[in-house]
Image (cartoon, rainbow, N blue to C red):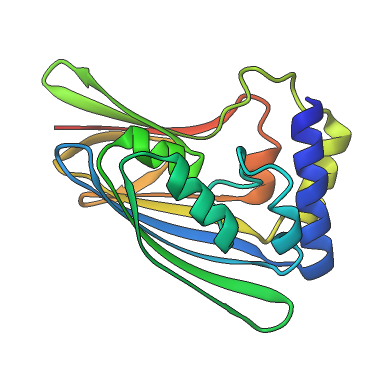
Length: 202
């Protein structure tokens, strides 16, 4: 739990000082498991220093600033960084990234998400874990209260285009072949059992 609490405290500091942390990601998934990731983030300039605390484990899913992005791209075999741009208004960074990946293991290594596909009869099930707390003790109510106050308006949104017909979705919504997962930062970090969604398709 200490690692999670430390992460929450760092993120709370970012939000309290600048009240801005959003990530919007789009994943185009091919039938072979490769594809392209595009994501846009708006994050405090304070994260330029704080993100360097632990390059092996991002403060939030998706590496944001240049050193973290380059480190993630080098670490993740099968990932090619096609584009990375950043701008700033003095208090926030606005980051745009475009990445191609050969399989879900590569994408998982780069983003910090945990993505996998498994067969289910004639269908497939895509599982995405945003945070995995299975090795951690539940976060205390006092920490959850701090999280709810600090991160109520900040969010992560992930859209995935599935290469097939969607049968069912748990933990997210879908329209056509596109699944949309959107949670506030407080919802993500206060979950005691991990945060994930699944998509069954054929």
